[in-house]
Length: 468
Image (cartoon, rainbow, N blue to C red; front, side):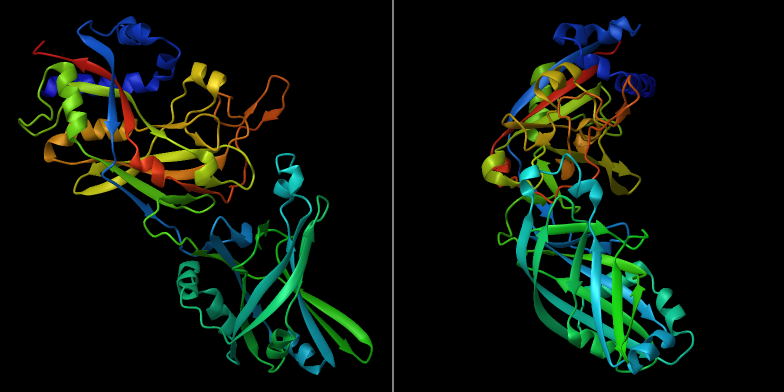
């Protein structure tokens, strides 16, 4: 038994490394592929389809954890997700002294929009101009101290600590204001005149000061994407003063910013995933239909219940699960491009279970003809996801009574859905061919109806039967 296990493990690794070749062949060539590589004739590559697999559960885990927006930031609302923008500033006594002495003062916020998106040829041309009357809640918290190490102490607060504190936000003041927003193809900056009460609060006392400033737009029609403070052209908080007809201004950059996410979905039982955040859905299938399909196919009893319970009678070369889908009634896409669905499977390690992301293998002939099968917002009515790692683990250890579980998440928009490279590459002319957009689409997809319909599992199995 041990000898068989080692041989089959080696066989599986080799088969997976070269499995892209399998997709370019028909079923008969697939069955003889291992033999063509010098493998023993007693090993066979066979395909098995198990239909009418209905999930026993599909649980969505909404991603509402505040996250860093130091590189690319977002503010507004899209696809029933609200994105609040929070900035953390530090002011020294010299700056506040100048503000205190001024006859009058005002404050502005400049957010520099991402040209890689808004000026990209892939951004929908009919989206411009982007116009709305944006109702914004501007809230803030001020913390002051005369202690010389105050700002150093603030800087030592970790990002994770700060993000956690934002979930219990209790501002000193909140002011509702409205901005008339109009963005064209050539515009690069979103300018917001901040409430007078904010600058008055800042300049009311000369001391070391920390400002946490939050913008919320729960009724926004759009999300606005801009650079974070890691860039020279990141957010700028400008304070202007006027004294004896002398006008001065000072720009201050936040030392960190965060995206605070709030779901506005009104269906707690719906299987909805959102793009741009790390929502995930865990889909669970019963073991019985899969084991029954294997038993009927091979004429053996599955699962394997002898010895250590590990079933090594076949190696899963490839496994894919196909779901039905309905893009028009079940989803919303801002950018109008197909979106990949990313898959993970659950594996055992010692006494724990971890999630391993699946490695996507290319079916080149199918892709060049119909496009990648693992996308939503695409032609056709099915979604096919590869679950090779997970199915290999499941079949091998099904004797412990486990069910089969897989994880799904929305990935990047696909610019060339019929390009079989599945990554950016350099063409023969030396140009870069972009397969994926570098920005997420803040999309929404409802899998509720898909999970009510039966799925189909297809297996490619390299098997050794009997005692040979």
